[in-house]
Image (cartoon, rainbow, N blue to C red):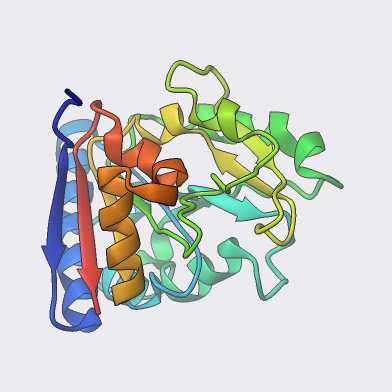
Length: 237
């Protein structure tokens, strides 16, 4: 018998409601961190799905000057590139009230993610972990963070007992070379959220949870089946 999955799904009739609900929940987590520890740390994903969530979270009233924001993964491009996750976070999240937050990048300016791995790892080591919240997304191929099928460092990144904070990742479906927080780093959090949209991803997620067919090999399954941190899925059509 497999242990029961520690996953709760919150479904919404529209994506604005989803974004608002998640923004309110993450803001609560950040306020709790500020109250308990005097600081808060948030890790977020890039892509198109979190844009509305970022917009809503940026308006939440809290002491953003004591909040540090980083990424769960990054394409190895400067923030002047349209595909940069840092660019997205700066333009959509670090606005309004949230403009006072400190951004901690993964991209270092080195020629390759392999060359920048040490500096990126130091950036994460310097954060006052645990994270108060980690917000993941999921691709149509079942990847989350930069845990891509066929990734050159996938097994190491998913090793629950691994020691690496961050790892470079190159994969057929990844486009650019990337750098990613490893699974143990992502699980060093007080709250873990998975933000997904669309019926295709809902079905993919259901298959991954059950380990059906090809979905048993989807990297996101490592997040869904781990027992360290409960996963809250936020879904909209």
